[in-house]
Length: 210
Image (cartoon, rainbow, N blue to C red):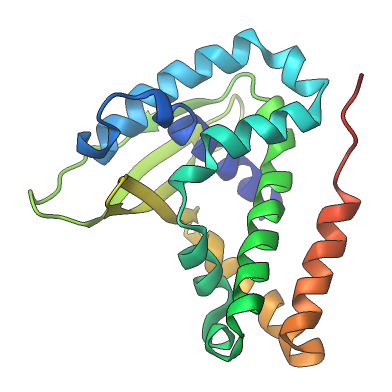
């Protein structure tokens, strides 16, 4: 699942990467936004592959600036934590969102830097004019391997469409974390999960190369 998770997250990066530079992004249908930005970013990443591969901190900063504003990390974290979310204090909720966000960035940064021969196929899409919650279906193809279906749950907010879940080969990204997060909370409490995520993120925080 981790390989598929990494692949899915780096594909999300392709999809969302350059939205801040897309004119009137809030008015663009989600499937069109996915396709046009994917094509732009695929070209960009191929051109600068060695630069990002050799400077992980620069890659993190790029992801933070260009990608993360287009995710609803509070809803993603709430779904991942499940019913325990209601028992967390506002400060704990804020810490959970922060650490889950860092965890996802660390998870797919390496896969993003390693992008090479994958291709993305976009499935037919339609939605009602007043739709506020949609699924954009794609398929990731890799040489010599079976295609992986990756579907994006997106909702319309004031600033445009945002991703709040990803379904990878039939498995929800956020729900995939729910079991391990719930087990950690039952054993160590909310603060225990925060500490575990913080320690993992610090361990994976590679220093920038000069």
